[in-house]
Length: 60
Image (cartoon, rainbow, N blue to C red; front, side, top):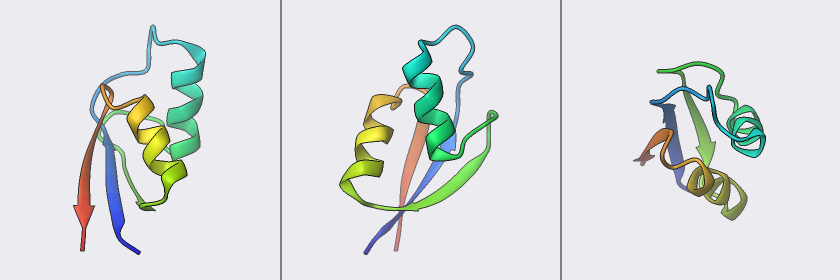
């Protein structure tokens, strides 16, 4: 299974609660923090929901 690297690029201040909770579920708490996840449909859906706050890279 491929892995993706998710980095928070923008602040969660003044964002709806569902977006804040999605970032928390991904394991992101502060700007420039990076986490690695498996590329599953659940994770990709969460990344899609907060795509304007994060950057994504595919790892091989």
